[in-house]
Amino acid sequence: MKNHWMHFFSGSVNAVISGKGTERFINECVRQGIVVWNVKKPGTHTLSFSMYLKDVKKIRRIVRKNDCKLRFIGKKGLPFLIQKALYNSGFFIGAISFFIIVTLLSNMVWGIKVVGAKPETEHLIIKELKKLGVEKGKLQFFIEDNESLQRHLEDAINDITWIGVELNGTTYHFEVVEKNQPEAPEQLSPRDLVANKKAIIKKLIVEEGKPVKAVNDLVKKGDLLVTGKIGKEGEEIYVPARGKIFGETWYKADVKVDITTKLEVLTGENKTKHYLLVGNLRIPLWGFGKIEYKEYQTESQKKHVKFFNWQLPIAYEKDTLRESEKITRKYTTDQAIEEAKRIGRTNLEQGLDSDAEIIKENVLRQSINNGKVELEIKYNVIENIVTTIPLVQGD
Image (cartoon, rainbow, N blue to C red; front, side, top):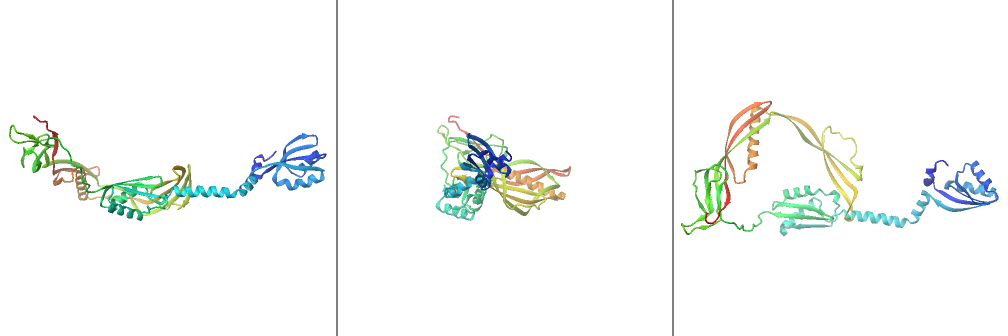
């Protein structure tokens, strides 16, 4: 029995032949090249067998010659399944249509909720979201990821300090923290203000408490600046000392800058590729072809397909390939020194409070070693030097 694996694809039938010439019938089938298998003899003048669907027309002529009766008792294979599917095509089309419609609806945006924003701010957020394509009825595949939405909204709307973005099912949730929110009054216990570092006092702003230091006094870390114990001796009361004491402090920084640096920069050219991910299979949809860029950086965005609240092993992926090139940046000695000063000042400012000010900088040491400019820089800074410690009544 050859090509048995083709039985399913070609289709086969089970038949019963009865009469006096059943053996001659089988022999004639073999001579005519008709393949039969599973030949059995359930009765004296009866044979059952299986054969290919395509040979049914040929076998009818042999039946007439051999004075036999043929009847079919079963059928199986792909042609019959297709016939049955076509007969029930309405059901299959309806099922497929239902799946497609539900999948599309499960991957659309059906709700946008903004929490923590005033009505006017909420209006600005909704307006900005429409520019980004975030509105009811839009497919989630073509919307930027949550981090990009958050970054765009924070940059575009000045009235918000922070906004959280979360996609829950088919609804986007935006949690907003607006600027200039009134703070609840802080309930403070009696305390003193002390210096948190060595400094020369330049300015005192005391809201509550009694100052014990004056302008131009040199203080060390831990020295008392303002006490919360006020009033005449024997009639003292204890208050939470409050205020700002600005002092001149000093910092040193060692900064190194390479005179020659190799950098990778983007040229502005880019190419986009789109893929359908099915399990571990990655099927190109659009943008395939040879990449002309010698060097490039890849940025990927992936959106999974959902069916109701279930995440299917199917996803849409968008890859953005940005062309890059390597360049060599070379400073003169003077340029490297200025860059080192800029880096040193920037690094220091990032660690200072917003009300601090750098009033002076001096280069203490300068050298060039192994292609690097090395600077040791001293900074004079005016900043708030206050920290607090609890004041125990009776101290």
